[in-house]
Image (tube, rainbow, N blue to C red):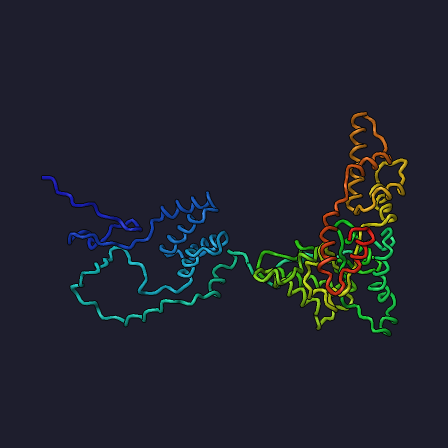
Length: 459
């Protein structure tokens, strides 16, 4: 007679047969808590390597690793998940479970250990042993310090590390002076009074108690040479020059923008005398009333603190800033001791326009150029507009040379034709400035702008 075979025996995670206690002896199915099979974990690892950005798949692997007791690898996988999705609630919950010490009552049951049904009363009393641990409170305080240790080297730091990273700003020599700035006589006079005269005459500066603190805010339509003037001031002073913009100091990580601003001023103080030029200051120092719920508000506060640094006094640090929209700059930045002086940089006058033409044509093949006539034809053009005119004229001459298979010079006719094609780009700015001069000229801050608009019959 053939022997009657019973139901197939089940296997546990390690490949061994389950104990008879796991069989259906009483007509019911008793569940066993078993660790995931190594083959399954290996398959999931390969799948994650093939699709590293699949957050649910990696989170599933981390959960199984934690169930298998491979806690360190589970934490590393959770760290990668949080890189992709920092607010993933399930990942944070698994991380909390991984960083908490294992509880004896919550330890996984090994293979062959039977879990009684809820309605079944054990027949045998439990053997005497140590008292049961007290039940942990429902709300467990998360240990952030332990989590940081577990994730060190896995998740990049999102907060400021004073020793990390290199300087994002460069200290340079300007290589220009105000003699290189054509025209703009009024602008040069204002700069002489604000910065150059006190710097060149230290004895008189001390006699009259003239402080070198504070800054100068240059404003005006775009493309009219504000950055060029700032470099010329640095060269005139023989000072080093640091130019920064919105993209150089504002960072997406919390606290990094404040660190960048502090580092900027520390570098300037170490390199004094130094001119710090803040381009697009309306983007860096926006009105805080418009930044109530954004990280930019703290960046503006940090900028104000650095400008008012009582400990270092900012002696020898000359602050220049440029903006196209001074009405968007926080008023606190413009009080005395900060950017307390303003300078309107208008479109270049006739002498300056001729100088801009000369600068952009100096390395091009030209013949018969009448700079005075070109300056008259470009009244109301910005420096950037004139650079565009020169570029367009050069393109026209180049195309003619290609067609004729012979190079030719750029003539006055090419430049005049380009002027006829290109219109001034600063009309929209003057429309906005006109409204400001009419309806928002509080305290006479824009009297100089209003006078220019009346002179040009725009007001």
